[in-house]
Image (tube, rainbow, N blue to C red):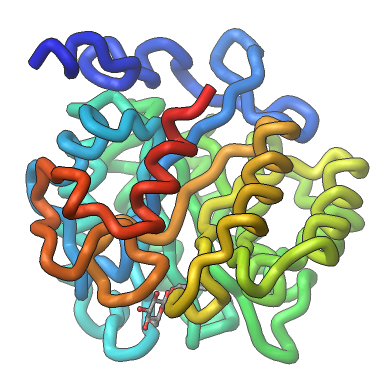
Length: 311
Ligand code: IDC
């Protein structure tokens, strides 16, 4: 369509323009060293709400996302790559869609109730080796090696040892791909990471927020981390409270959007799905294939779409 031809993201899209990403200081940059901010959407649980073949192409043409995050639950609430590895095919479908649409794609090892990333570190290593082997020639790929570490014993040193196990395995196959590491306390622990960062280049650290739950105190920690030079990627955020459900907090969301724009921090919103919950971008009756009309979009979806497209 004309729209697709004019889109910043299709055919000669964002990966064509930015090339291979790199991390300089605390900033995500394009291949030439210019700072960039990616904006896009996270999937929901890929077992419950798998993308269809056309979902991402429609999302790129219509919303102009520059990044998508494929959230593959490893072992939470009945969604388990560990027990049902076939969900990996949906990750590959999304990566292949991202290659076609010329956008960046985050491959998310979505730990959650399995809060210690070391629990399945061998499976994680094999999964990321397989993904790196399949896709390392493509600058589109971003590796997110653990969604939200949590639990009393899951301190930053524990997460760091996991990262020191996984990152060399990825780097052996894809030497330059950007890797994002989750932080403690459901990826709110950027202060501890900033005090003791990993030694590898092209690594970023996840910060997650939900506007109804996380406010100035979390932004203060993030400001501290930035002041120490920690590269932050907000791989997941929502307008609801941390449950993903219920009311939307637009005023608090506006503060976070302003903060992310000010620091050119890249982000992905939770979630591009028709889940029956406030944070989902589609209404429960919408078809995940698209294309979508305005009446298919939830209040969160309409607001977030406008933020993706804002200057
Ligand atoms: C939530 C989903 C919800 C589901 C729950 C358990 O929105 O429908 O019942 O997971 O699978 C996170 C997690 C993310 C959560 C989200 C909202 O990374 O998996 O999704 N959230 O609770 N961290 C903070 C909030």
